[in-house]
Length: 225
Image (cartoon, rainbow, N blue to C red; front, side):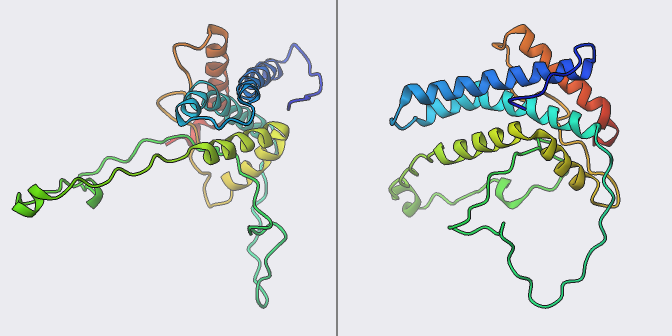
């Protein structure tokens, strides 16, 4: 997608996809420029959170919708019949190992609403403790060290680069998984908001994200739950 071939300028789908490509590339180049300025210095967690919010999330949001639009223009794959395994299954060449790590996979799923229920899991139940002398005089628990966000950010950025370089392959893989079961899976987009659509975004970029969302949902809204 970074070196997409010229497409008809009178086709609204191709026009929107080109706008999305330019939008994603701007975000990616912005992130790359920040790391070039840092050089060998380690980025702080605060910087990584800013880059995630301001650039990575909206780039992922745009690319996720591009993948869905491309998927809508591909033929629905036939469901493959399960094959019986003969003997001990041998690990394939793509099996994860320290010597052969898997490339990060672009995440097509956005936050979904939790089903309403009266049952609270144990982790959300209030904890009531008796105020005994031992509790009152116990030293405070040591604070946990801050979690380094570098590895997670690097994997998300690598997944974005990989999907951007071959969005048609990502669309084909998503289609296979989407129609793998007895019924199509729900639409992966967030039903309530567009991730990364912030007030600080320029107007044209907001419009591109909204138009991408509208077009993607026009193809897959019937499966939204």
